[in-house]
Image (cartoon, rainbow, N blue to C red; front, side, top):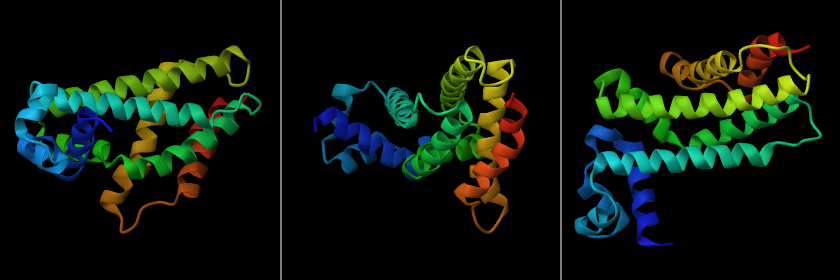
Length: 189
């Protein structure tokens, strides 16, 4: 692994544990086992480092999701498989949850901006998948962007928000079942 990648992984760890505001370039350098100057060789500042970490996270999420898609399965079956896969993937990406928490508590402008970017990327990706399903006649015609937004917010509510107000997280099966019985049922032809 190259130095730049080591720094990105260290930054992912630091941002996931401490959030954006509490992370320092010194912490990232220490976790990566490099000097602070080495971090600055690759990244101008902490904000640029966060942006690169988030871009990497989004790219990984898209690749992970794409790897679960099966052209011989229906849209609904692919959604189910993808959701199950993303639910296990979420454990590796606590960064998103940490950023959501920081946005709620501290309203950090850099975090708010990066969360908008994450949301836009995810909604765009899901909307594209919905549009393909509409074109194939697998789901009823709808506004793909609005449905994708609803899917994302529902998913976050069940995965992130639920845990904040309840003693234990919902199981993967429960989350998928709720989404299938509500949003996805409304898309069925």
